[in-house]
Image (cartoon, rainbow, N blue to C red; front, side, top):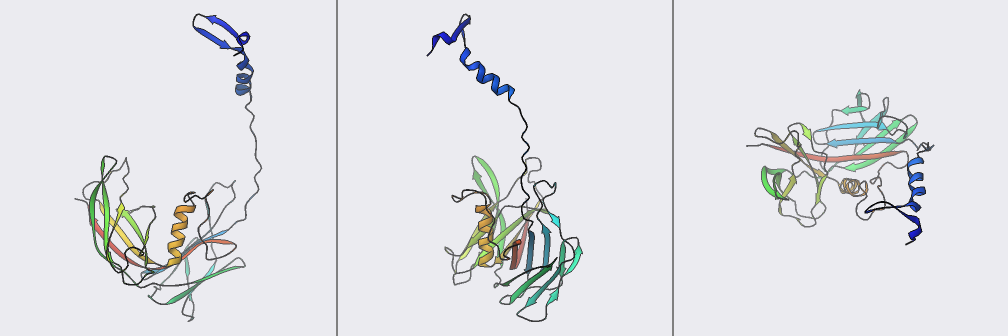
Amino acid sequence: MNYDALHKTAPGRVICTCCLPVLIMMVSCDKVIDLKLPDAEKLYVIEAVLSDVGCRVNLSQTLNLSDSNHYDIVSGADITITEDGRTPVKLNQVNGGYYRAGVSGRPGRSYTLRIDVNGSVFSTTSVVPQKVTADSFYITERLFFGKTRRVATVEFNDPPGLGNVYRFIQYVNTKKDNNIFITNDHLIDGRKTVYEMLVFEDEKDPLKTGDRLSVELLTITPFMYNYWYSLDQGALGQSQAASPANPVNPFGRGAVGYFSTHTVSSRSAILR
């Protein structure tokens, strides 16, 4: 140490004067840098669902970094659903970028979604899988990190033959849990299965007696399994991903999103 740079000030206290220029620079350099980031290409965001209980498409568009909202709804699109090459069914715009049609998907049938918007056309085809129903639904309790948590539990029978994939959506009263719950049949093929979902609890509004817990068991396509898996992993930078990434995309350049053809089995229970 350079003792010439040290000056005694009081018994037991020493100041290193060689550090003062660095400290001055740290407190004095407070310049605001205005970054001029280029606007990214705007993409259409397509959220399309055809199930055995209905058909809907939500259409929006991404915004620039400088815009205040997260998305921009898109009106005036021409959207159709076609079953096995038959006469297309037109979806009606019901509000802003929300489109609906009074049709439902039938297991084993192929459906083509076509969206014509502002001169751009997006199209993809998907098959509705065979339906698997939830046989029972109940609430169990598990100990997590010293705290007892309620767990929504679904029982169902996986049909023989690999390739069945599932997504689960749960609700507390009418509030949807945005966690992604998916599974495949690699380890459960042809077996009775018990699937548990940790119920989320709001510290300000904890679960209480009389709350209704609901679950939807969706039998989805392998593509949608990959979509939700990549969204859950890649978008969070997991699985050794260097950075967040977009999930798999069926629409090609100019759009992101999904077309989910699936069946729905719903169950609910009351907390006691």
